[in-house]
Image 1 (cartoon, helix red, strand yellow):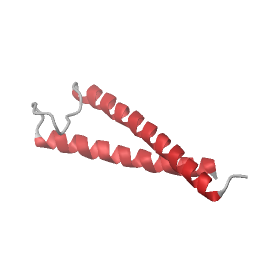
Image 2 (tube, rainbow, N blue to C red):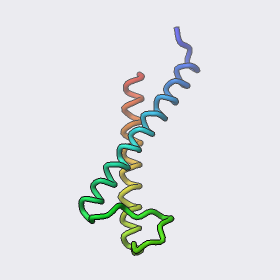
Image 3 (cartoon, rainbow, N blue to C red):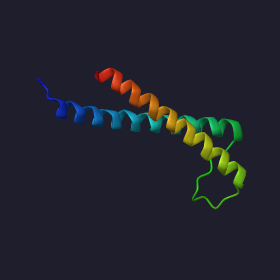
Image 4 (cartoon, rainbow, N blue to C red):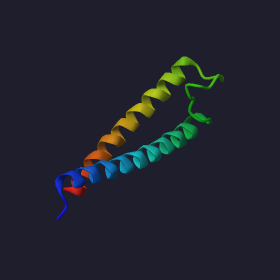
Length: 83
């Protein structure tokens, strides 16, 4: 039988992997959607290009919201799966 400590460690590792994968998929989806709407890739903080402050702020807000949502959903799904 698996003890509580081992099960907790396994759930943390699995949760981390699932959340990381979900965040990667979400980032790709945001980039693809942004590119289809605007015609170019979303601006990044380190870009010194033509992106204005409003475009950078909107891209950051959308990316942050999607990342947070996918992390919560992945964590809940992992917890439900492991319980």
